[in-house]
Each structure stands twice: as structure tokens, then as C-alpha cells.
Length: 428
Image 1 (cartoon, rainbow, N blue to C red):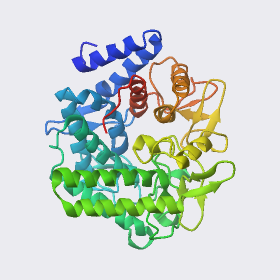
Image 2 (image 1 turned 90 degrees about the vertical axis):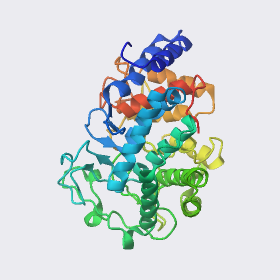
Image 3 (image 1 turned 60 degrees about the vertical axis):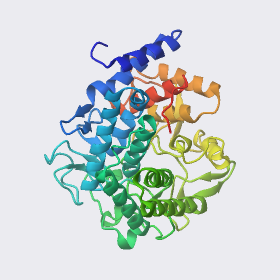
Image 4 (image 1 turned 30 degrees about the vertical axis):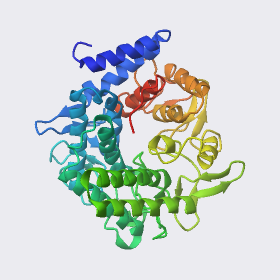
């Protein structure tokens, strides 16, 4: 560990000492926690930090925030990590100001990525799938950096312009059918990679309060355009913007706008997305269209319904969440799988019978019992395929069958969960 910062080395030692009776966990943590730092972060001379996802050489707004989030624990006392995360925030808002509808960007204007897609591409954009969470994660990271370090330097003009664009886009997408300029068509065989109706997506009822999303955080197209967990996340970050506007920016108008939009979306979730389900009382639907159609499921990717307390939308003992969680971790959820080695939530993005390490981490981070947390730890230990790294999805009967051998987001989620088991959590 000679080439990593002393604060990281010290934390790794602390984890290994804490789990001295389970050396496998300590080795997994060391590999996962260091992996993002050594392989995906590219500090630039302008103070910004470019972050690749792992096996794809582009920066996803969502993934990059999740990848560095555990480093906020180090940033509390280590200026090096504080600057590194600040650089990620600055890069994210540079990209949001370039195009708030894009989800992934190139390191420079090199024209790489999905340039053949029918949408408003530029040379800087790798992919232009509009996803609510792509706008939420950078605000969350900026807020958490402030709480971890007390620094407000990153709340600059780029940040202020970016959050105004975010609010504008959320407002426009409350009326997607009549007001939105966005469309997306990809001419490939995989139907989840494109939107129906010549790129507009499935019809939704306008003006119900929630804001539309073209794609899920899996980068798969939404079945119904009001993606509930992403709207939950939007409520949380809009309230972050309100707090930042009041406390740091002294911008009462921005605070008022953010608060009003958060309340509209939240009210709409409670009105349109809480639906009776036989055997579970009322639960949150994953997607709705405003006309009465809904989708009972969850996806391993965050934001998910399972992650609602982790995101800060509700408490883990909230009645509707508790009902929803019970449903999600059952065979009623079409993406829940049980096998010889593991059980948990997968995704339509990966094959049937594959569950995700990210979903296991979220289950652990939202669990209210030590027994469930210990069960999750044991599943992590036996599902890394002896690589000491996390993967995207793996087969519930054979973890040697997995997708994405290099997936930084999953490594960081495991690291955050393991640290939480020691009482070390990101400040909020």
C-alpha cells in the first residue's frame, strides 16, 4: 500500500483489525476501497477530477458520485481527498451546464461514444439518455462534501447555474408531452436502449406533479415515465438545494423554487405511487404513468425503492417503506431471486437469476437488524468469485458467472456498507 495516502492506509488497517476474525472481509475491503482510487480517478490541472466507471472510459454523472462517496469519510480530515471529491463535483457541474439531458461524458471533446443516436449529441457526450438521477447525484455529492468538510468553495457560479438548469429541466419534464424538447432513438437490437413513439417514450399524463424520466439508473428505458425512486431522490436533492440556497448562497428565490418543486413532487408520489398490493397493504410502485398504470418491481441500481432511506427520502421504519421492502425482498418482485449461494435483487439489465452486489449493499445499509446485516456480509464473502472485488450481477447458484469484472460503483458500495458495520458513515 506504499502508493496510497496515509489516511487511506490507516482506515484499511482499522477495518482489517475490526474484522480480524474474518480476514476475507478485510482483504475484500482493501481491494475494493483502493480500486476506485488507483484505477478510475484522473485529476486534471484545472482542479477538476474525471472519473471513468471502470471498464467503460466515460464519466457517468451517477456512477462517479457513488464511486467517490465513501472517500468523504477520509475527506473529513484529509485535504487531499477533500480536493479530489471537490474536483469531481466541479467536473460534474461543468457537464450539467454543457447538457443537463446527458448521462455520460467524454474526458475531452473527442466524439467518442454513441454518436449515431438520434438526439442532440455533441463531441463531449458519450451517451444522452435522460435520467433524473444523473442530475440528483451531483447535488447530493456537493451537499455531502459540504457536510463532511464545511467547505463551500464548490458552491460557485457553475454550481448555481447548474442547479437552476436542474430545476428548469425538472419543471419542463412535468409536462413532457407538450413542453419537452428531448427525444432519444437508438437503432440497435436491444429494445431497452431506445424510447418508443419516435423517441418520446410511453405516453404519460402531464401535470400530475412528478417529473418524467426517459431511462432508469440502469440506463434501460422506463416502462412508464414517472420513475418513482428517482422522483424520491429529486425531492431529497431539491431540499438540499433549498438548504444550500438559504445557508450559503443567500438566494431566497432559489430556495423558494426548490422547496415548492420538492413539495409538488413529494405530494404526487404520495398520491399516485402509493398503491394497495394484496398481502402487503399499500406499497410504492416502481413506475407509474398518471393514467392508472403502474409497475410493481424494483431495480438493483440506485436510486431504487429499496434505497429510499439510504437516499434520505424516508426512515427505514416508515410504514409504506416497510411494506414495500417486504414485497421487494420476496418472490412477488420479479427481479428478486434466490439460489444455492445467495438471494437478493437483480435487474432487467442483466440475465434472470443474476443479483447485484449494489443491491446487496443497499439491503445491508437499510437493514434495521444486526442479523440481516450479518447475513449480507456472509453473502458478500461467498459471491466475489475469489477475486476480492465486486461485480455487476452474478448468478445466485454460481458466483463465478458474473457480469463486469471491473465495476467501480459496486466496489464503493461494498466499501460503504462494510464501513457502516463499524459505525463509520458519511455525514449528512
